[in-house]
Length: 217
Ligand SMILES: Nc1nc2c(ncn2[C@@H]2O[C@H](COP(=O)(O)OP(=O)(O)O)[C@@H](O)[C@H]2O)c(=O)[nH]1
Ligand SMILES: [Mg+2]
Image (cartoon, rainbow, N blue to C red; front, side, top):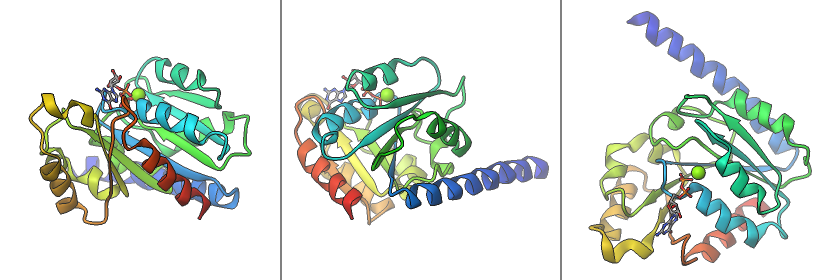
């Protein structure tokens, strides 16, 4: 059992070293990197689809898409006419810094200010892997249950921003925004919280203005 723990620690140490190098590279190139994490289906790609048209003429940007299988999400992003590179993890439940490094090398457009990374849909594993990002953005939709921040605290502790998505569905599901928000803030009081519907667009302008202000700082 001790051996298992040692190997896992070494994997994470190697990942952290690569992530630190990526962070230095991006900082020197004035690139702001955002790592989007959530369960499958919470709306990571939908959030990118809502964000990109609003900001792409203000901020040169690129996207790295992480998926277990398929390039379906990368196709959705490509349709918005921004540079995108797909990582297929072939079963792995998270992105690692080395994969992101490889993907960044394949990005032909290097003159970017905002790099958005969509992680593999999983509320557990991606929390352990630093990708060199400036911030993690965790998305929870109102259909997932208000208790999720309490059940998966690591992701909420590591994140700087919480996006509560699919608020258009509130009339149809048993969810209470005050409870969901309170649970998240009890785990991480410094979370910046946005309530949003990627479908109706509610809350998207406020989020985009804030993201823009972070990149330009
Ligand atoms: N009703 C509603 N559906 C949404 C919203 N955002 C995303 N969806 C839907 O949720 C499903 C999963 O979204 P997707 O962006 O692919 O999630 P991802 O797996 O986290 O990238 C799709 O059918 C979206 O159309 C929203 O704000 N409201
Ligand atoms: Mg997606």
